[in-house]
Length: 300
Image 1 (cartoon, rainbow, N blue to C red):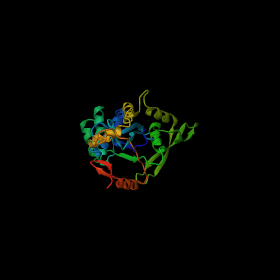
Image 2: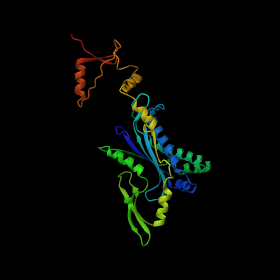
Image 3: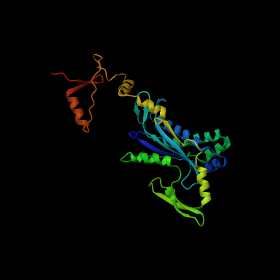
Image 4: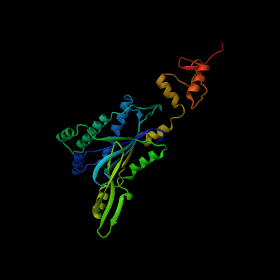
């Protein structure tokens, strides 16, 4: 995962009425992953100006079939880059504000289409669901921020850790054969304050739920898309130092490595400064901008 990009943690949820239908029909929850990834990728591309398919985001996504209260609640967790990278030239584009309302509707439509594909719901049932949820299905965006890369890796670790952690177990009563565990029951979306509840469950029911939610053997539950897909990653590795020149030439139809007068290759030079304004003032005193190039001023 490239920590130089801006990332966001997105949760694609399913409302209660729909969840009940999915459980009754034996829904294949892992098929939600590519649908959610497509919704996110299209939303980012659209906000950047409907760029073509060479522009990719990096996505890591998984599905959790239950909440941490061990209740059936399939939902997709996704970490995605906010930046788009052109896999041919290496150019980077940053989209504007995301239309969250539109994303909710697109996610609802994507999940309803999946339900039709799996023959879980008829056209009439789909229409009923859309009438019941006129604002679409909830999709939560949480920017991944922090002073170090640890925040990003902790989020990725959460995706891979699964639906339950040993630290949730409060007590085990071997005499009564019960397990008591703590789970997050509510999160205030404005204050981020978390509420917790505890539940005591028969130990055999607890084991049965744990086993039910485990993925089948050899089934991959974490998917990588776009910049984080294996083949694309290998392709990006071969984009060398000339990438920046190709990107500028593609945008401005000029090769910045060639002299505009004689066509010979110019010597590369990089200047980095925290005092950008001062450096620009120095440049303007000694150079003049002519046809897109800074040229040194001649004497009087």
